[in-house]
Image 1 (cartoon, rainbow, N blue to C red):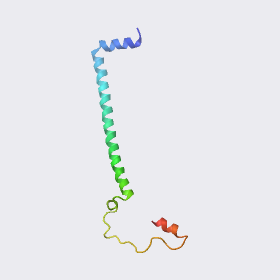
Image 2 (cartoon, rainbow, N blue to C red; image 1 turned 90 degrees about the vertical axis):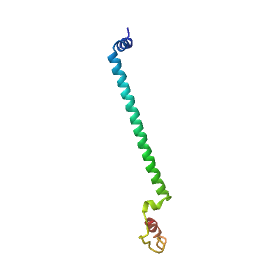
Image 3 (cartoon, rainbow, N blue to C red; image 1 turned 30 degrees about the vertical axis):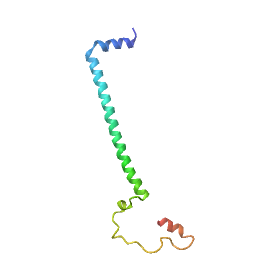
Length: 94
């Protein structure tokens, strides 16, 4: 008799062992389902936050990022300084 056949015979002859194996498998499957749902919910939250960040970076909703700008004064004139060599510094300021 092979080992597989012998273990199959023990499992079928012992209802307590069969029940324990069945309950163990049910617990493992429930654990897999719960962790999969939790992972899906985490990915969904991450996608939502990344979508918001992308919209802000693309400038679709800049008011939500900066808030109300009624009390902020902007300097007048060009942000670039004059001359060929200082345009790099002006571009850095942007």
